[in-house]
Length: 481
Length: 96
Image 1: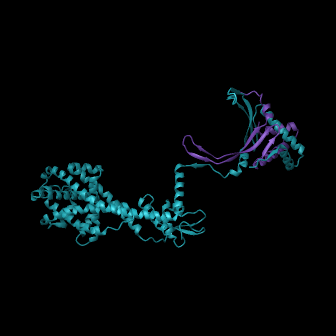
Image 2: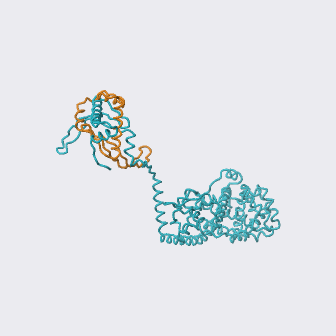
Image 3: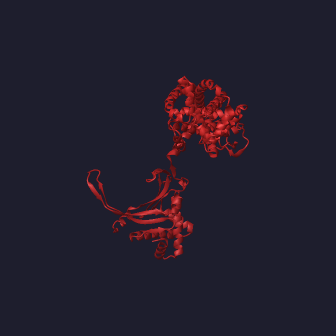
């Protein structure tokens, strides 16, 4: 800033040369002008000059103060003061050097985001760190696999415990069973057969499970389902032998059964039927557990049409078409899994179902509710699988939504945020422009990159799996460089 | 007293036509503005100094919403009255 001080003389000279009047006149005018202002101020008036500002007289109140040397209190007298408020025009002209600056609203979130951004930039530019994080993630994967294997064993124990819990439940049952005893044995056997069918299917499924390695959570859940099913299978095969004489009726009748929901919902009488036949009490209890599980399965079928469709498909095609079987079994899969998990977790009560089943029979209502609720989670598992397929699919970029020129300071992450709403999805832009971009951290300015059109499911920023997958891709690509 | 009244007053004192005075006043204001725009300080004898001061950037917090705003630095015109003027207005009765 210029600290130079000029006197009124220079203003006089300037005015004189500008208006081509004599300096005397100009000087006289200036003097007169300030005298007039002074007079007006002395008269208590404020003086306003267009495009310059306003002069005002301001009264400052007397105030108390302390003499620094003596510590005495002194009173400073009130006084008048001439204040000058510059006009907007003058303000603007004077403030021109800083005119481009705007007040900046500081948001706490914003600041954090910026800090994060800085961190990520540092991370991206520092290669050894990336290699290290990659290694860390590999170790994590291995650990999760080990955990999954050990959790299998734990699951087996859990199932045993559950079956014990069911024994207690069964003891309460006989009162109900006595009522509806007659002529139901056949139907139960059919459900049994259906279940036997499942066993095969389940074994198929074990093989069919796609290798899910990228994301830890789904993997462990899948292994859980496998272990969860293994145990029921054991029980069923034991019962299968005993029920061999009933197997003649089989599939056509199971289909009939599906159309009669009230039969489906009351499979318990079979328990009473079985009990006299069996001397082995333990075997009987195990069988009852299986029956209860099946009851849950059928009730679920009745209430959720999508699952029913699955079952019908299964029943119609069970003899020839194995692919549909695997589909049906997948749902059964989920039920077993969820039944197991519900034993452990608290129950979420579906009100509608609760009313219906408490009317039918109390002790089982809670459990059947659990079964029905579980169906929702199956849908989630299935949709997650389709997402997995989307991930595994080789991506070919044919459609593009825009072109972007790389300028100084452009970043793929920022471009990604602009088009996809999240920075992590920059990997897809990189994938689509691999011919042009050798290093995603250092793209030469002037490069024109194309922004690919992506499947909405792939860039769903609310889906954690999409984000995780993008991050894995990032690790992969940045690790390559 | 506004702009026009000031012109009228000066015109009466100097015995000049108002247009002339207006021209002179505008030219003076323009000259002062220009000098101030360059960051120079204008000293007027027995009246005071016009100077440009820089206000540093600051952080303001809205008392109600707690929104923090960074106010950029700016240049403002400051007027400081001379001691002569101060003495003249010292004895002025203040209203209150």
